[in-house]
Image 1 (cartoon, rainbow, N blue to C red):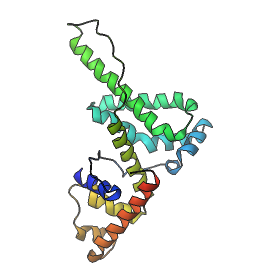
Image 2: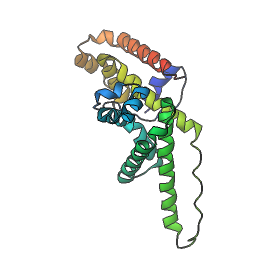
Image 3: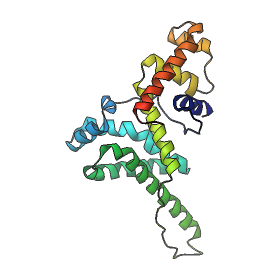
Image 4: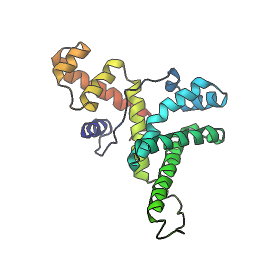
Length: 214
């Protein structure tokens, strides 16, 4: 996790925690489409677009119940419930760029009420008429962290395969691979790894900047 924070710090020129991301996933071709195209094709009933939309944002959705500490079964329930909300609410989405934040808010809402329900189960005998509080607004820093996580996934997916694999081995694997192993897998000279690593980080930085990462 600290190495991933270092990676984003190199790209953004700042420090801060970064929530772990899953980037080595099998993707459908439609996952590379823009959100505007995905939404348009989904509304037209294209199955490929729905698969691409879910593939693109499944890690983002799952990251919310993970932060809330939900068990795997409940996390899967939150994921399914959020996807159902997406199916129902997509025709009313006015701005496709708002989709990631909308998904986060729906998932947060589901998790919050799951937590409240667990608390009510524990205290029901003592206080059976506890009112159900309104779900709080999503904290700005949590929204920012989750958006950064999604930006990093998308930027990594846009890198050339060699750069993507190098960054995975150096920043996402635990423990980080030694340069000798990285060089052997990528077919590079050991002495060139440092220079190539820096070039790949610069490419990642440019991609993140284009996405609005600050």
